[in-house]
Image (cartoon, rainbow, N blue to C red; front, side, top):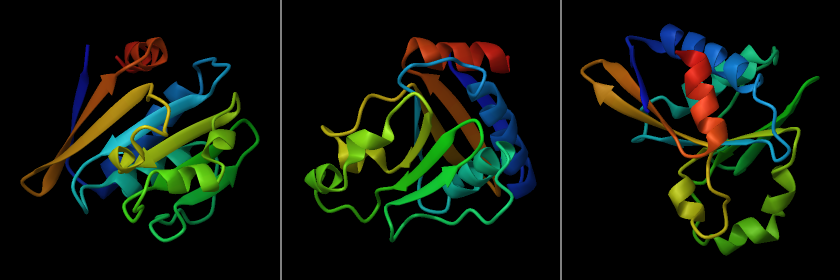
Length: 156
């Protein structure tokens, strides 16, 4: 069962991200949680990520990892890794950066442009589709794993 939500503005996107992260952190997992964020350029993937990361207690800025590939946030409860693979030219580059080390019991991995890492990245627990809707956005959460289904169940 997918979950859909209309997001009228940036503030609402951040608030939804906060609520979503609070839900995600309630799910116990030995392998962490992996979330793919899908949407066109400017759709709001980084804005949603900012809401999620700040929702877990990060007080500083949340910048797009477009040029660094990953931004790390080590918080009390969890480690959040925010990936942006838009500029990735070859999935093998992920192996050189030690991608597998990021996926552990303490981690929540938010991955933008995950299709660029196909064949290297683990399957997601949840895919978030962000689509333009006039000046607003529609968000659809698609569960892939049992953890993904639990997240959506907790949200509804």
